[in-house]
Length: 593
Image 1 (cartoon, helix red, strand yellow):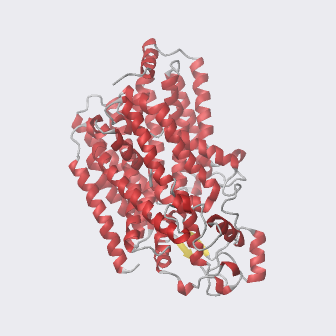
Image 2: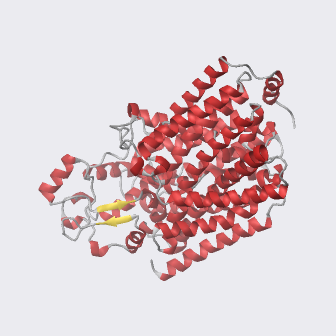
């Protein structure tokens, strides 16, 4: 990277950091109510914006467009699942949990199921979900920092951990809320501005969503048609193919898993405890969906156009792909390739020593054999291409102005930091409020509880950073695992707690454990214990998956196990006390406020 670009990057990112930390100091908390739920005084529009930032993580900003770029049509499961889950949350959970009036999800479960044990099990589920989720965020922070600082991913991740620590520990929910509003503005501006520039460059249309279905600038050929043909010429499936990326079964299960997982995410649910009135909880969910839709309707266009730009860089003549001069020479690599190569996230190897970069689907045996026999290719020479760099590298690939490149870097960091802060708050509140105060030391002072919350948050940062060095997949894939765990453990229990008054504590506890254990066992079988692949029992591919179900799509099966065990155990044990059943009835009754 030229020195001027790095200076601009550091300046823009530094200014956003100063803004975030300034807000956190300005809104620093002095009570547990402000630390956990911002004093329940956040406007629903502001809370909707903060919720959007809380939920649109590094997976949304950095990784989702990369997944769509590589998966094509089937990558739409992430769009449908993550956005559809907000509809479920708005209709089925947010207003009822806000009416119940507790600080945390485990606190609701503990009181609703009249059991300290249920509260502890809910804390365990929350910690497993949140730590898995925050791994993806730390990876996103590491990638963004390695990009800006021009250092390996490990150094970037450690740098990001330090900033997250400074940013998250001070403000609590009050500070995090106002900081997330600022981060949403940075994030959405950073995502849409480059998309508009690139859409104009490729299609002549300033609206990316329309440009995706439009024609190439100065041509009658549609962008997706040209993209399909280029990929087929390189031995890949068509970009728009419905049978690429993943099976339809996995696409369906992943969509449902992400939907119910979204509705069961504890760090998002807790945001609806921060508004003044019950009706504001539903309004917040509606505004959040609107703010999220701005980015999510843009992501498919970013994915397709990023793929087009990458191919345009590597392939100089699409009509003569088999010819040597049609491909980029190693010595002509643009600066962005050399810089990303230094991070270890992009790599090349001249396997046939012709001085050119041949990128194609070497896994397609028939095509690879033909390429070797007719063109002298000996394997794809783009040896490393991390999907998570697509969005961050896209402005550089397209040759956009330096300030736009810096803005995207700031947006990626904002996305990762905003969600990491929400997750860390959920983790710290579960430990300090639900375990320490709720179970082990009910007489702890408010000052002692705040100290415990901050210490647990710091410990969570260290653990997430360590696991982020060796994640089980790309950022969006790691997040999908967390959503599956939420779908299998907390969502069914929350639904039963609100809508089935005869569900007792024995059923709830057994169901949560069943859903969590079944899903964790399946994930660890293929991903490895604590996500270390060398500890996996079976290879992580479709030939070994149970009924062909991807670990990221297994949350639905875990949810069904949770429900089945809950109902069976509830039927053979005593029903809940009458006052608990009356409480459930009262929570479901609308109330003007």
